Image (cartoon, rainbow, N blue to C red; front, side, top):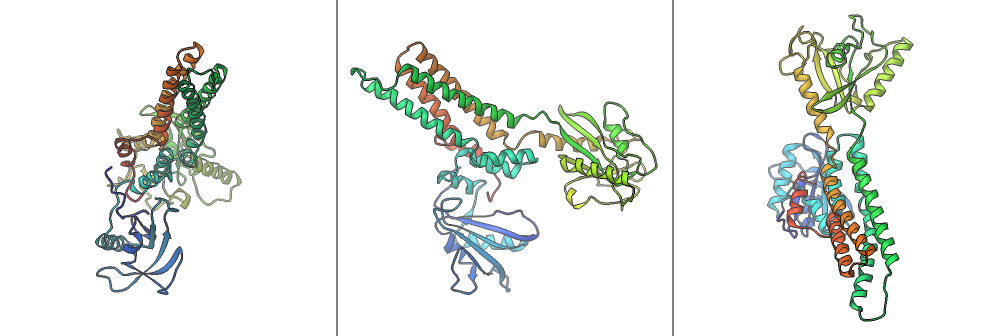
Amino acid sequence: MNALLDDTIVALSSSPGPGARAIVRLSGTAACAIGDRVFTAVPADARGRLISGHLHLSGVRAPLPADRYLFAAPHSYTGQDCIELHTVSSSPLIELLIADLLKAGARSAQPGEFTLRAFLAGKKDLTRAEAVLAVIDAGTDADLKAALAQLAGGVARPLDTLRDDLLNLLADIEAGLDFVDEDIEFVGKSDQLLRIATGLAQLTNLKRQLDDRTVSDRPIRIVLAGPPNAGKSSLFNALSTNGPGAIISPIAGTTRDYLTAVLDLAGIRVELIDTAGIRETTDTIERASQALGQMQSERAEIVVWCVPSDEPDAMRPPLHLFDALIVYTKSDLAFREGELSASTTTPGGLQDLRDALTAKVQSLSRPALAPSQSRCRHHVDAAIDSLRRAHAHVLYDDPQELIALELRKALDQLGEMVGAIYTNDLLDRIFSRFCIGK
């Protein structure tokens, strides 16, 4: 990434599309001057981190209400002067705003350039920078929790102490090499063995943590939900490879409990869950069944909301299931063009649903932190190998130069892991995965 760090960059840093608020971010030495070309404070002499006022956009007569947030260097995300312009999220207006800021002297930010500047300014090490992307891309609560832990320093913080210990040990050994002709012992054999073994234990524990965050024994949960008699149990039986398990009946409310089956989708283990239909009821048992179903839906990674094709106006997903996958069941009765449909009575009637579920499961099976964890594991493995060789050299009384060489190799691996040592190719590979505006 051949970014010019003195340039002032601009990008939309909130989600595109209509909404209550959009955030346009600028960072660079001229961020304030460029922002003031389009923003007027109200009152004119307003000062402070947050200033309310108006935006004056080309071709728009009426001023646009906005707020300006100032984050002065070096206490900003990027370490540079950084401002955010907050206004209504209207795509045409935001495009005009960014165009005016570009005309005023800013340039469009490259993918991940804000976080790259934070890294180069020493605001974040490389593992924390990667965690920013993982937080954005997290598809499950577990992914988000792991990404936030790494963002908070869960990987880098233990390495800081370890690198200091190894640097001190290397300094002691090299000091002994400088005074090899003198009768001075800077660090004894037993002390060397203990300090290297301590480093090995810390790295082994870190490797175990990285492996635990990457691999999970729990299958991805898919819940079938929707109004009564929407075909959920028929779908459950058709998708399950273990044979029929749910009682099917034209009488609404037949399913009173939830049923589970373990499936294999593209080599990924999945738990399919059939739940009771959701409707207004005074029946105590049915209310309890619906509560169980709601609990399963809240714990699921994927919720399939079933709508009968012959009753398209049936109950829509409740607000807490806003991202549910909607499928029109019983498509043999009333096929809906352009919608995800399924039928358990026609050949191939489930293929589109299987394909959609497989795509979602595959996207969830790769943790958002996977690229970062893969890179970190590579450096941890290499550092462990170097420390093992160093330990063996000490144990067999090999020359101190060999011990120092292996310690330097281990330190180089840890330095590359946190970004103390880096190349432009590495930064390109990491930050090019970011979206623009982050």
